[in-house]
View 1: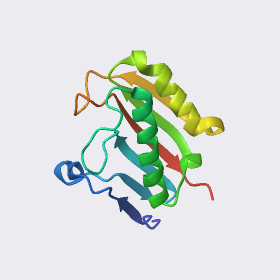
View 2: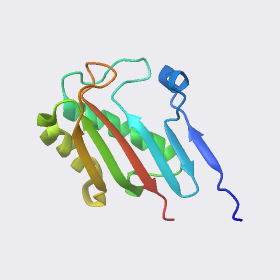
View 3: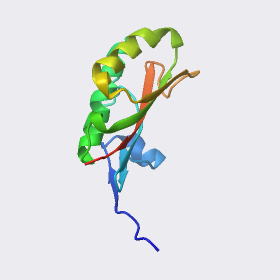
Length: 133
């Protein structure tokens, strides 16, 4: 029987992590999974409340931090899942995604959801990454 890979849980310190019982990111072996991430700062304030593209940029910065804490980077991302409260925002969200991922071109899903945990949140993104080096 093969030995289990070491598990690394990364926390950002938000109250939601303890209340819900989750990690910002988890690394097991070469795989990193980043939880659904929104544009809420450490103080609980929503970044860019009416700007889906701005929220996306903020979210990707947070995702990049989570990946780095696990030894990864955006270049390791194989899949993104994007949840929008208004699918009509797909152009600005897609442009921000393109800015961040450019030639990486992960597999991506973008869907509309009825709402997120705070009415000012327009976007939530989660990613799966695989370390190759």
